[in-house]
Image 1 (cartoon, helix red, strand yellow):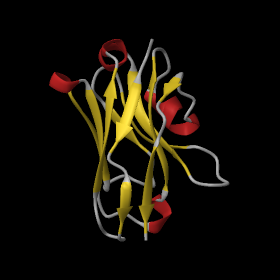
Image 2 (cartoon, rainbow, N blue to C red):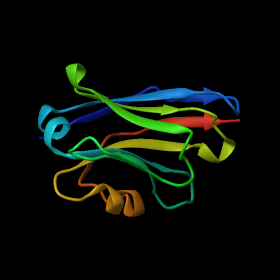
Image 3 (cartoon, rainbow, N blue to C red):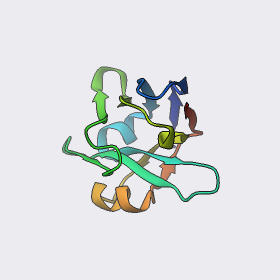
Image 4 (cartoon, rainbow, N blue to C red):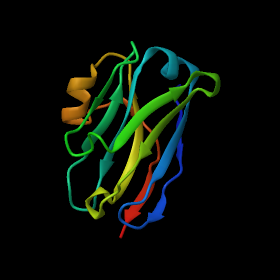
Amino acid sequence: HVQLVESGGGSVQAGGSLRLSCVASAVAYSTYAMGWFRQAPGKEPEGVACIARDGSSTYADSVKGRFAIFKDNAKNTLYLQMNSLKPEDTAMYYCAADPRRVCWYLIQTSNYNYWGQGTQVTVS
């Protein structure tokens, strides 16, 4: 059973920063591709960032240079550091994991096998 529990969302002014955290089940953390996607009201899910099994990362063009995805192996925790936030970054952010699909596909489709309950990010 894969569990993904996000935290760290909140409200911030444009230009500010937030760090999202996702505690994952050990099997997902160590063997799955993991990432973040977001969904704003009335919009389709959008892939944000993904980290592959080999540790390489992929980002959506809209967040390149502003967001960073990384892992803390000691805590089975995935992070998304978000800097220079913009109002258009406002969305529910979901931590996600997939046992088979690769990051370039997951960034384009957000079609992960597992995801958490989400954490809201609001930028004003």
